[in-house]
Length: 44
Image (cartoon, rainbow, N blue to C red; front, side):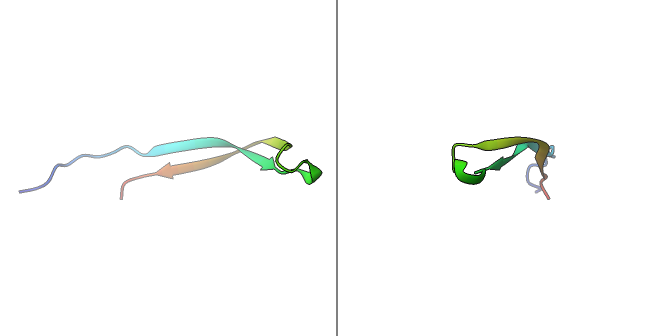
């Protein structure tokens, strides 16, 4: 007897890249960039 069969779609997460902790600003200053971090997760 086979178990349940399903096919899950891939999940993609896209977040803006940042450059944090600029110089003497420590955790108070940051820089938003026109770049993104992409992560795609699929069931193998």
